[in-house]
Image (cartoon, rainbow, N blue to C red; front, side, top):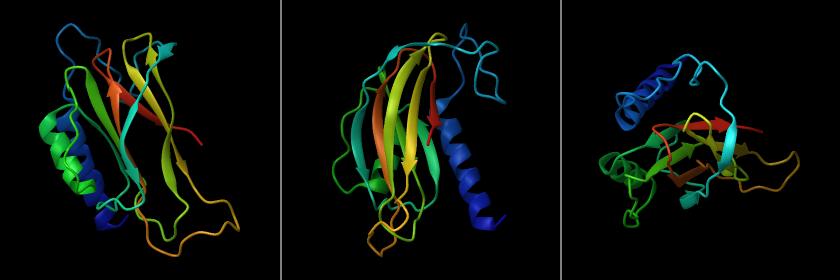
Length: 165
């Protein structure tokens, strides 16, 4: 494993821990190994996400996914992906999910939302997919770093992110 990857994983873990925090008193704690409670939660509804920004050239080129729960962390993230003013997000009722694919050698890659859903344990699950160009597809011959930044209404104390192909 190279030093740069270890450094990126450690930095992402620290930022994630600062953004998510611990459950409030009286809330059920998640199993830290699997990210779920002992019983598998069921889907109870859907959630409308709002895409704040997506693109092909994030200023960060490391692969990571973050859940942000406060304005300071959001402003820091926004400065790393956009030169436009930071959009308003009500963090009492929303979280921000940001996913970065990391550097790619060509165009044709993207990150997109498949669905967002509420779970029976009060959490919100955001399901993303990393898209890649099909074999033989014409793509730009330039380095890219695809990303997406979403605002997600939260109904519970936790937001989880999953990926599907």
